[in-house]
Length: 198
Length: 88
Image (cartoon, rainbow over all chains, first blue to last red; front, side, top):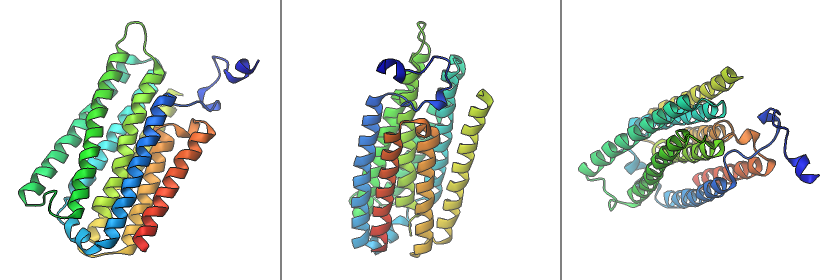
């Protein structure tokens, strides 16, 4: 009886029933990652409070344009990921696969912009040892970059899933997209903390 | 139905990109000096963008109550801590 009440009829519109997008395991990981990043964001703010002049002076050497362009690139990638989920839900696997490929291309563009930015900074002597601002800058952007690389692998798994002849699992496509969106939202906050604050 | 979903996603992306450009321009006006006003506005924009990504792209608006509450609590606590420490 209880089970019957919990499972909606097959033809019920999805939006009427509060269901977990993706799967619970992915949400545990994503929420955990968000909390860990959150703690480090707060630690960054504590250090910034102590060394405000150093942080402001160091921030000037960052390329505001690179940070902004990378934000726009990740937002575009998130749009492709969300559209891919919509296509997968509608049963259009080919379109979903194409959209995931576009999402991945944006991810690669993000890596290239970031690599160029690091190269320019290191060439100008702004290395990780320079001061606490750069220590945080390289640690945050490095860990975030690792998440982007993981995301590219996740996108590959999603593409493979869409090509499965036996039919794909929509929840897996949703879970992969949720991970990708998390990478995007963490960057939104990093962009504000590292590049925009004055 | 399909058209509605696609256009909602594209509108969400357009709003997020526009907000990014606004905060980019705002920060560029104060390249070399501290500004509480610019900082508060760019942090507020970041909070709004983050919530839009969570609700619209991650589909948390359709998720169970606990997940909507948990993500809102995370964002509220984080932003309060960041802005609080900035103003301290």
